[in-house]
Length: 144
Ligand SMILES: [Cu+2]
Image 1: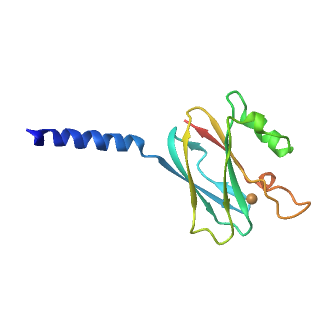
Image 2: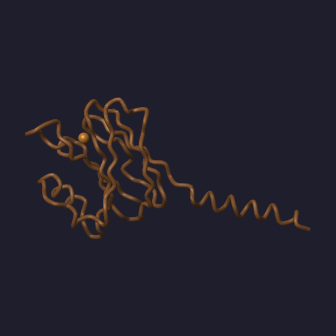
Image 3: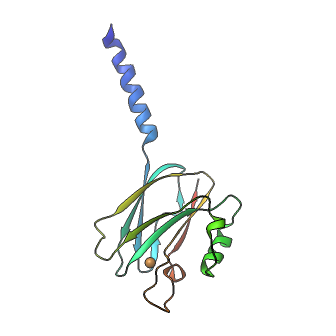
C-alpha cells in the first residue's frame, strides 16, 4: 500500500525544486563595460560576476524605485548626485580584480517583474580620473 504513494511524492518534490531553481545570469566586467543581457526574466536569479579587465572593478546592483525613470537615474549618477533616494532598498556590491576571470563571485536575488535594475562601477583609475561608470560601466536591466 505505501509503495503506491512514492511516484506522487517524487513528482511533488521535483515539481517544487523546478519552480525554485534560480535563473543564472552572467555579468562580465571589462575595461570599461558590463556585458549582460538587457532584459532578464522575473523571479529568483543567481548573478555571477566575472572580471575580465586589466584594472580593478566593482559591480553595484540596485533596483530603481517604482516611478523612477532609467534616464533620470543615469543622469543623477553621471552628475555625481546622491542616488540613494532613487533606489528601492539597499544595493549589492561585488568586486573583481585583474586575474580573477576564472573565479566569478555570485549573489542570489529575486528580480521583480516590470522593474528596472542598474549596474555600475564607481571606481577610478586614480586621482582626477573619471569614474568608470562615466566611461561605459553603467548598464540598465529591464525585468519582464
Ligand atoms: Cu570599474
